Length: 60
Image 1: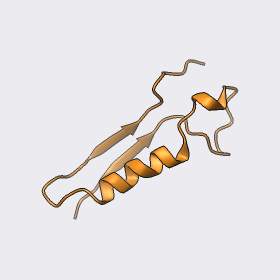
Image 2: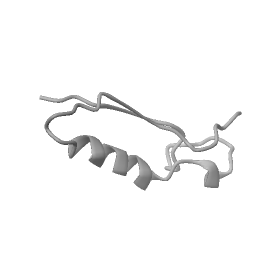
Image 3: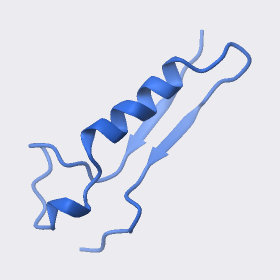
Image 4: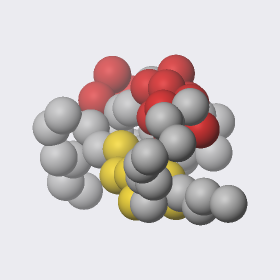
């Protein structure tokens, strides 16, 4: 059994209520691609911690 933890940063979903330009947030599809990558990784690797961050760090 493999276990992976995905740590998404600020993602453009209805749950994110911050006062920020939504264009600077991570697209949900980008987080989904990281999850698919962890699930479909070859049998010889384990992706343990996946941090999905915006290209530009947000400050609030």
